Length: 224
Picture: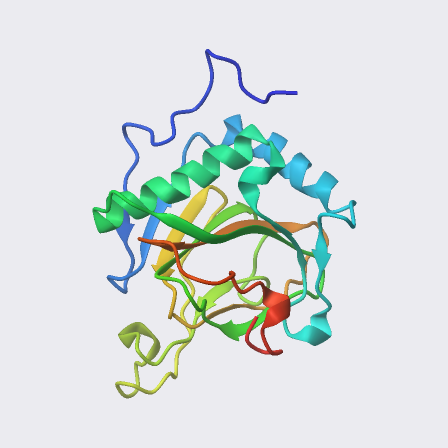
């Protein structure tokens, strides 16, 4: 069943949509105020898909990653997923003033209690994008935080340049889309809530890369 009709279909990029630089100028954030029009249907679609072992990859916490992952958003046939997919690509085009953009990999992550993701970067990726669909139970300073921990980012090196001493977490609420360099080292701290924490992600480039995209299972533990 379609989630939108011709009268209420959200614009791919609302006229009033703003892009904001974070404390690190290479990181860009945008908040979508129309999230209520598509998020409930998208959340249901994702959670329903996690029940299907044929389309969902479950990662054990001992692998250094945790969470359920559903790859290739456009293949879902879900209008809300396609909308966010188009928004991620539009964000890339606007930030880099690029007429071209290629999706190396796209996926949704569903974190349940105890799930986490160790520090890693995204090979083959010029810019990574994450959309915060549902952060689960009320976040705390310790639960399910998306953080950067990179010695190339001055905001993470407050004691001495080039030495990562202070992991930093942007304030990300549901409805927020964040874009960052594919090389940026980031992680998700262990999620302590009981309700699912759900995000959508993209690995983007100006042009297509040769070879196949690297899904987490093809990387060594600790690099997922």
